[in-house]
Length: 233
Image (tube, rainbow, N blue to C red; front, side, top):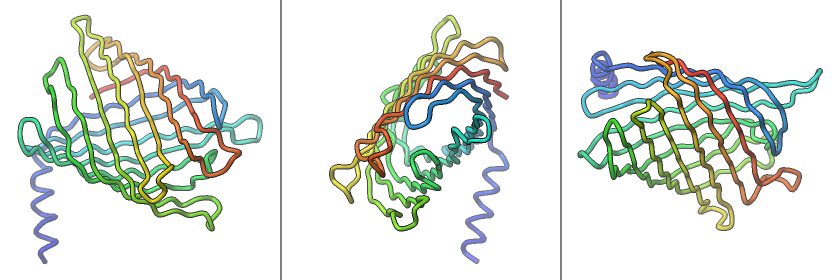
């Protein structure tokens, strides 16, 4: 019964939430464990109410050459943020992802942390996030499945210029406590040119480094160069 009341109060708050959607279609040039040219679909849904926000999004990339699959990766991301003060927020997230070419059928990441804002205005948004991550990795070889305790350190800077261009840089470091020598470093740099209130063009470069891949056949570094048409509602 208590759980039903919590769900009722949550849905009541969501009923008065402000909602925005941002979706994009991209052309990608990928180098690393999978080399291909293909299309990518990505969507982000944001709900805001009172001092809370909920982001639900994800992407799916698929490509094949002749009859051979050359790329298949995806993610589903949910992030709940509760504003404690003007500069501090509590963040709870769940990221489910998969990538055939690095031997991950599905990876479940559960995050709990704090987000600190150095600046949070319409023109400039700059924050750092630090917290705990628990990962369950379901690999294509079931005997290699992993259950890891990790940390997540994340930084993001978004700047909107007078010329209606949006610059975004983010960088995250994910050390693995279960295996001290294992860590991930991911980051992205993007420039978005706002055409009108609905459409934009985005150019982005994303790098992903794993210092301890699942097997020796897998490369340490992947990169994505993306050109996207973005629609925001």
